[in-house]
Image 1: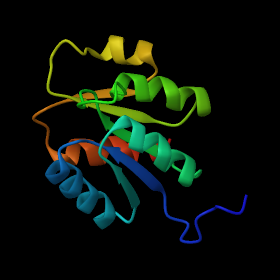
Image 2: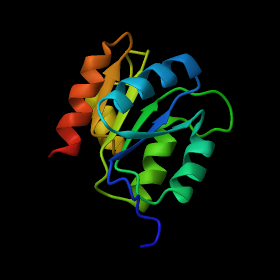
Image 3: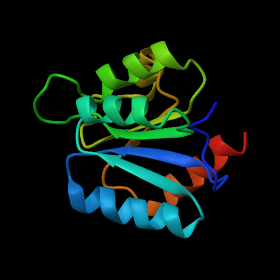
Image 4: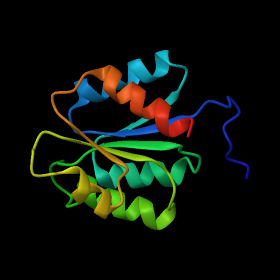
Length: 129
């Protein structure tokens, strides 16, 4: 596989249309020694997925505007490509319960507002599983 990352760092894909949130989360993950790729919607995320075939974990918001590829659709598409990669979904809406997300193929749902350390702990947990 010629596309393997030379840095040996784990690569996290963050998918969120709120750029500020994505960037703060990205900085926090990079401080933990991880590499990060950011996409602002599901369609862009799938493009990034194809560009980097070594993504280790996906963090995605569930609700993203436009292009009818929200976090749930993205989760299903990623699952078709990789059955075991950890997927963490973020939601500001209480109707997305944990069982629902797991049925869709996600590993975990985090509700907004969240503390960044919650996400960091989850990332740690799933990467070192």
